[in-house]
Each structure stands twice: as structure tokens, then as C-alpha cells.
Image 1 (cartoon, one colour):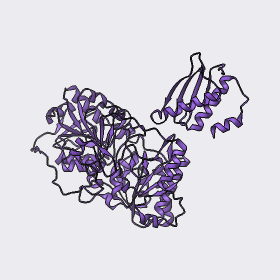
Image 2 (cartoon, one colour):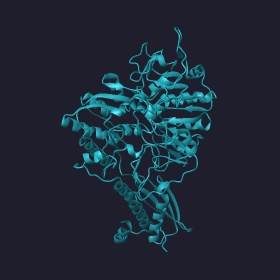
Image 3 (cartoon, chains in turn orange, red):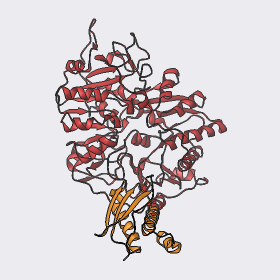
Image 4 (cartoon, rainbow over the protein chains, first blue to last red):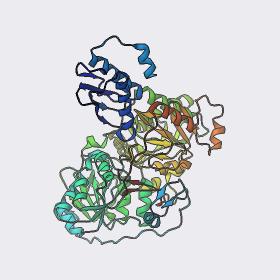
Length: 102
Length: 510
């Protein structure tokens, strides 16, 4: 199991974007999502964020996300970048990441 | 539950009361005009009163009555809030309001609903805060959403009986001759107010620009007016044009506009003497500009433009590209000025504009209408009243009227907006039935309604990309994913009348 080293953020508050902040915790995954498409896509977006965290075997994370109607590709990309930043990693595995986002 | 012709379930109590939609012309029967009570004004009587308070006292307004307003000041309207504040202060309850539409500026209405001052509403639309509050279910009786033509029909046939109309007037004389082209807050045409003036038992004119008698031109004549009240301000001229858009630079909207203009110029309707109507959105204004270029290039003049008038249409008149503007409402200041200055820019009332029960509305003479949409479904049904989250936030407007009556109705919309698909399986709420919608224009191409085989033939050789409505929906869902169905409550918060007065859909609380 991997652990976040630091609080990390990715994305913006622009429309069609997702701003996501990851903070380490000791209690397990918590997702606080605010989305302007909550009713239609809220559960889907939570599942997508969880899916990305699972790729890195991360569970002790508090996720705070503000979604302004981002598409799936954007949600995945912002989440992955936040994870890398939180892990203090810069050696992006592009091949693997591309396979997730395609 | 009763299922209507577009497959929507209407709760039985409302189906019994209103009837259900059975086709565009299924319920256009002969009828008796509504009657009204008239109190004659005698020589030496004075119509001018000192305040809105005095007008409420003089008209004898009391619990349970129906009052009306017009929405020509759009987001700049002060009149409805002023009158309702005084009614609330005087302790009058259980009032029905019948404004021609409701804007964001009318958010104080939420409190009057909660206090029991206002207990029934009919309107063309409901915007952000008021729409959200109604969708939450703060009003026990459902709001009746009527199109502009449908509202005129309802008043003329007596489905709405207005006890007192409180009509904001950009200018009036002391005897109640009113127009919208002079004064401090000019709104141009008073097309919606004219119907109220004609059919309300009592008419109170509220103005901030009292002019010497007689005030001309006369849009609402003294013969229909009981009282005149002068106040400091009836509206904010800036607010009248709020929401009216500038020419778009958005490449997606420009592409949609280009396809829409090419559909018009490529149609058999595009010839000398053709006519059209557009809305206010960025893409709609761009269509007008592309059309203008094509008209100059092909030496074609339009006989009239109709609307919903914007500066872009006033320019066409000035440039000699259209013969007449037929105007029920103005969306910006230059078009209001044009109405005052140009005899070929002509004011009409909502009954003449779009009523299905008049002896012929102007829309019946219209060739092409360009309309917007929040959603279009694979049956071509259009939603312009609720967001994809089920919350009331739009307006019926002239959408169903114009679509039903004109020769080629075109709905222009992007395939997706952010993550919200615009082309969907089933629209959240049906306002305009698919049988009225001839062409859907998107950035990915144009879908012609299969029922319009004549149009399919007309565009057989066209180079505009053509797609089916199902293909558009598939593309939209590929981009956004399939939205989860909305969870509604059991309370009916709005009834969507078709223009003939039957119910085409209902909206539940969310």
C-alpha cells in the first residue's frame, strides 16, 4: 500500500475542468465532491477518482474536488497529476497513463 | 395518469382539468371571447393617483384576485417587485400572478410565496433563483407555464381572467395613453402588455415619465386604462438589454450559425420576399449576420422579420434588406429606438404575434424560424424550460408557437454543453413536440426530421453535412457518458401547457 507524502493539488476552477486536492489521512478514502453535474454524473465521477487512486494502491486519502463539468479524460488526468505530486514523483509512466486515459 | 401524444404521463387531476396534448391542431375549436367588467370614466374624472398603495385601494384588490404584469423590462423590471411589496405590506393574501414572464430580478417573489401572498403563478418562464425555489416545491399549486401565444390565447378565451393589470409604461399622459418608445426607461414594443390592457377588468398604468396629453404614438390607449400612477423609476434601462448577446467568437457557435445560414440560403424559401425570425443567443445573431451577407450577394430582400427584435434586425431594415420589422418585444435599446423612429418597424400584440386562437397570427405567415434549445431528443421534442438536472430555469417563450406555424423551423444547439449532452434519448421536459421541429443544426451536422420528406428531397444534393438525430445523440453520449436519471419527488411543481391549453408535460419537484 502506498502513502501520500504531501498535500497536492491539480486542475483549475474553470468551466469543463476539475480542481482536485489530495491530503493524506489515516482513516481511509473520503471523497468530498462538489459538481455542477452532481445529479447526472456525481457517482460516476467519484468512481472515476477512486479508480485512479486504486491504480496507485492509495486508500488513506482525503479527496476534495470541485467539478465544473469536466469530461472523463480531464477528471482522470487531473487526478493522476495530483497523485504524482502527492507522492513527490516526477517520473511519469506515460505509456501506462495513456492506457488509462484512452 | 394519462399518457399524451408525446408519451408523457400527466397526473389525472390535471389531465381532467386541462386536457392532454393530442396533436398540434387537435384542440383549436371555435370559442367565445372573454368578457370583462368596465367602469366608465366620466368627464372631469381624474385618473391620476398618488401611489401604488392608492391604486391597490381604488381597484379594490383583495384576497384571491388575479393580477398581471408584462416582462418588457426583462432583468431591469422594478414594477412587479414594487406592486407585490405593497400588496404584502397591506396584508392581502392568496393572489394569483400572471406576468408574461419572470426574471432573476424577481427573486423577492420567493418570500411572497412563502408568506402566502402569492399562491398561484402562470408565466412563460422561471429563472435561476425563483425556478430553483419552485422546483424545491415552495408553492403548493403548480406553476402553469404558457408560451407567448398560449398566454394570449388563455387571456382571450378567458382561461386567465385578469382582475387588475399593473402595467409599467415608459411614458404615459395623465389619461393613460402609453407607449414604450419615449421616457426614461424605454423598452420599445409593449406587445405582451397590450393583451392585458385589452382584457383586464381594471388597468393601472405605472410610469416614471409623465408627458403632456395626448401622448403619441399610442400603444395602449386611454380607453383601456383606469388609473395612472407616477413613480420615481419603473425599470433599469441597462437591465432591459441584459442577457442580449454580442456577436459570438466561439468557433463552435460560428460553425452552427454557418450551417444554419446555409440551410436557409439552400432552401426553396430563400427568395425575394422571404421572412424569418431569430432569437437572441450568440449563434442566432451570427446566423443573422451570415444571412445578411448572403442576401447582399444574391440581391435578395426579405419581406419581414419577426420577433423578439435585436439590433441586428434593426440594421437589416436600415440597410434596406428587409421591408418591415414586426415587433412584439425588443431585446436591446437600439431596437427600441428603431421602433420609435422607423414607420416600417411595426408594433403588434402577442395575440397577433402567436395566438393559436386568433383569426391568423403573424407566425402563420413566417417562412423560417431559428430557435434555441436546452435539449432535443431523438423524437425531435425540444426542452427549453428545465435544465438537465430537472430544475426549472428557462422559458417557453414563442418556441412551440413559432415551430408549429412557420414553414421551416430550425433548432440550433451544440451537441454537448460542457459535460451535458444536448441531443438526448428523451428530453427532461417537452415544451415543443417533435412534429413541429423540422431541422436540428449542430456543429457536427444537420439532422432533418424524417417526417419532412419534402425537406429531405430539397437538401438531397446539399453539401452541408447531414446526420440522423440518433447519430447526434450517440456522438453526444460518447463525449459525456450516459447521464444518470434524475430522481424526482411526488409533487407536481409545474404544468407545461401546449399553446392550445392542453398539457404537453408536467415538472416534478427535485
